[in-house]
Length: 285
Image (cartoon, rainbow, N blue to C red; front, side, top):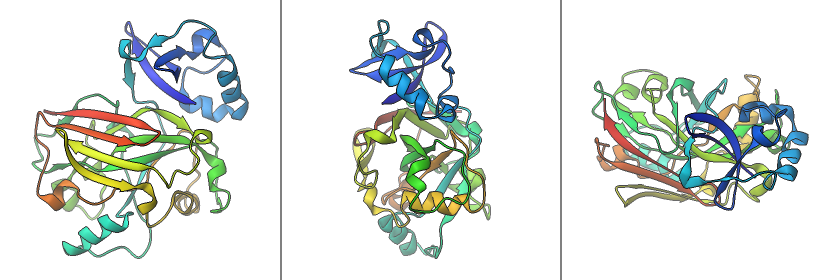
């Protein structure tokens, strides 16, 4: 199923997306939390109830009538892995950046999260705003020390992400966090597609364009460390909680490699097969 967070008539709620419409979950099932993170935390039984009772419980709204918001706006953690696609690692190596010999992790501060079609701000303190198309993963169960074999069992679903990066701030610090965490630099969405709908998350095509010009294109099979390896690795360090977000890496042709940085007015679209697309306009601060 597809779970979304949306605003209609100045009211924000959560809903099930089906056949081009969104069905309000709390209106039909008042005992269900009006929060996707909490829905996942409640377990599979609640997801099954939502799938069984909606749509059909009441009339839904057309998607073009509502404003889609970040589906999860309150995660405890938003983790992201660097240089995790073979082609992106090679373009980094060609620029003189060593390829990591282990998983390279950083966090995006959760305050960067914004909606799938919301504006993204070009900071007045940065001239090197860049894009990174990524597939996102949502954790569905509290877990620690997860094996690779069991990692899929803790996944709630997937989403489309753009790991926006202020490259000058990224380069100025030994860690990536500041360059990755400017306000609005975490657009995600358009919804969460639950794991049961995706046969193989490592066999999806991912595309990014700027003003209609294709920039990035790859299969999610191009990862160096797959999703299960990523989850297992992170869970050795920290307890993963329902609603935690993981950005799984980007492919080649980021803006810094092409010497094409984003400017106000640019429209950046990221699309992943079976997950949908997000599209954000760059605005000046």
